[in-house]
Image (tube, rainbow, N blue to C red; front, side):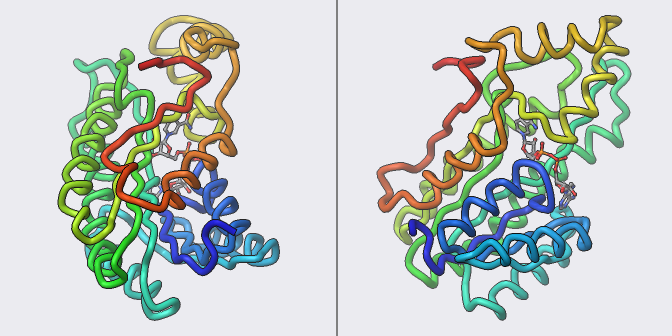
Length: 260
Ligand code: NAD
């Protein structure tokens, strides 16, 4: 087991990509806090994963944009399991508009969930990693950390920003054995993406089928969606890697949509 008894906080893990990462970690023996806005869904996921074992999970209510809620959630994890080894800052949303129509309130909301969320959860978890003499901070970026698409000014800006944050944390954390890396998935069929298909079709005046085939998967090597399990494998690699050799990096998992 690669994560036996490690304590992980995963934000936005009641469903979607975060849930798949939580499952992968529990299968490797980790104790996972399912930190999500939706407490009922978080508790349900935690129960299912604990039944799966060999690790276990708890559900925690957390709005990642609220400093007090983040600090209280992380404190609860520390009270329960006596520390934190891994943070996966994964909670995120998508809002699409042309720049001239982008409501300022939506711009601020998106940036806050992705960037304030990453900042606040890192700030709350990293002292506990320093206490333990090591840890792994993982940010959920995107191909949009490296590439741009129309209608996604806020998302692309936020996802590029996470690369910078990871590089700083990798330099600050090195002396304490704390690594920081970014996962950059291509399109994964979760509620976040399913919601975008009709929205983009409407904004761009094309069919939903065209959005999927041309816009979402047109650049991949095989026309395939990346899966939540694919992303979870990369999250396991970053969590379990044993030394500071793998830090300050970003790894694209996208069926070749973006190559570097
Ligand atoms: P999803 O919508 O399926 O799940 C997101 C989860 O985050 C939900 O459980 C939701 O309740 C939670 N959440 C939302 N706002 C929150 C907040 N303020 N505080 C705490 N939790 C909150 O989304 P997903 O597709 O699983 O996306 C997860 C992450 O992966 C996001 O950061 C997203 O940008 C990124 N990503 C997704 C794709 C994709 O194609 N789905 C691709 C690349 C990157």
